[in-house]
Image (cartoon, rainbow, N blue to C red):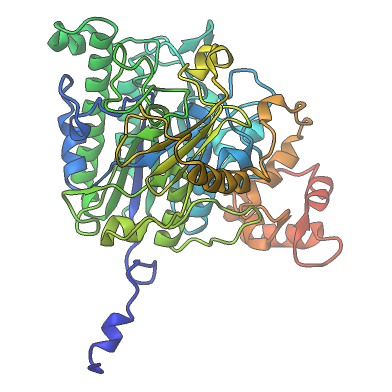
Length: 513
């Protein structure tokens, strides 16, 4: 081999923090979007020009998997871990005494460690049981929007109670929520320091019920029956909002160094009436393809080749390890990650790094496995789990489909392929052997003092102790670092160079954090 070529062959295909400026990262998560609602994924009746343009500029992900309902997908995205490991199988509802466990390390925490400004504009949906569960305690510098789902788009209320916040503090504000979320996202981009990378997570509540939109957005779709007509207007408003955010990037001169990710949080509900999941079977709340395969793409000018349509099976859990490696953040953490680095798939058309993907249902024991072109389902039902009628329609039988020939899951071939069923069942059982119970069924977590919640916030690598670097985080400590370092040494009663929870809480009770 030519000696001059050898160094070129040894160059890494994955950009690192040392090789390139850290990218800005924007994740658009559209609530309850159907697989075929947008034009880039086959939609015909709703115009989504801004979304479609972004999709064509990057890689369309035809086999991108999520969870069947809202909260579990958000947990998977932010932790890189399956529902079987986080315990978030189902929706975290208002006043529920649980949420995404505080032991989990979240993507914004990892990115914050390497200098990112982190912000969420939109729907959180991972709990507010105690102060430690809210976004600004989980790695986000800024929070704006609502903590739960199904809010009124104009009054921002759910069940008669307001659900609208800025930095986790109640905010009274008028306006259509999709418009407000876009406005805040644009404001953050405009105010972002050019030498500081931005992670902006934008989980719209559109197009989730209640189906509401200003009349002007509905008018172009007068020929569609309701509720599809209203949903079309809602998606048009989301498309407009995404266009505004991208325009803000362009105006700031940040577009060329911004990775934009897009997906739904689950399959569309009411397929054929509310949303379109064509050609997939069933919809939201199910483990059929219509419930767990999402419309998705990734775009980054000059880094992800434009005009790609990728068929490789990927999962929402893959974004955390991919982005951690891309940004140079540390992958070291207490809890193991289920996701894998998919950057070579996006940039080099590599095969999926997964030999199999787990598709957990909304309760333990209901699950599917995607392995190559084959898919095995256990305890599947076509009912939307969010409707509460899932158990009545559950068949309990094993189902096997070859998605290469039968993407619509019409022909169950389990009876004619017993060896394939056995092979996939063994792999599925291996995935499920260490599955944890649903957090919704566990006793309420014990109350956490504000000081203990602050410990969890500062403990970004989740190793159960605070280093000096972790302790120094926070405006008051950064304003007086020498004084803060002296306090650290005073708190460190056993002089081991770190603070246990007990040391941090007991020694600092009378002080401001």
